[in-house]
Image (cartoon, rainbow, N blue to C red):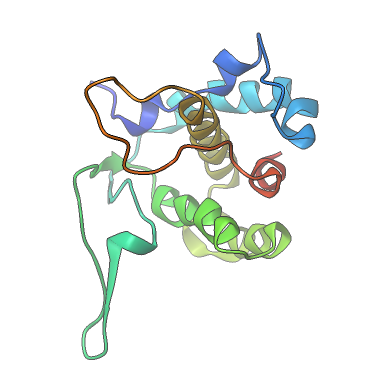
Amino acid sequence: MPSTVAALHGWDELISDPPADLAPAARAHLPQLAELEASWPALADGNRIVHGDLRADNMVRDHDRGVALVDWAHATTGPACIDAASLAPQLVLAGHAPADVARLLRYHPATASSPDTTTAFLAALTGHWHRNARKPAPPDCAPTSTAQPLPASLSSATA
């Protein structure tokens, strides 16, 4: 059974009818993004335990013990690069320059050893976010946040 992480996608749906507010960089690279995303499921296998939802609010810093990862609801197995790569969009959203984040990914041991897998994962992840940001919330669910299209800097970081 494929993991939830392997099923990430979105560019494949957006390519046929790109939204008007899609960042110019993403629009210009839609075929490449969809192609990278399509390569992701074949690369998603791995023997590492991955958190699957690594972001700032899932990390707790203790001055004595260091950083602990919490909320393992999306834990799965996959390639070692997933958790390190999933931090890239979070860093861009936090205000770091996409070029600096790209440089970090080039040199981080988990992502540097598998650049094709890292790139395909980031394409699939951002496609998933772009697609889901445009979906209405289910009628029986109260929104927990306001879904908005991703900033242009995030789209250009993966393109």
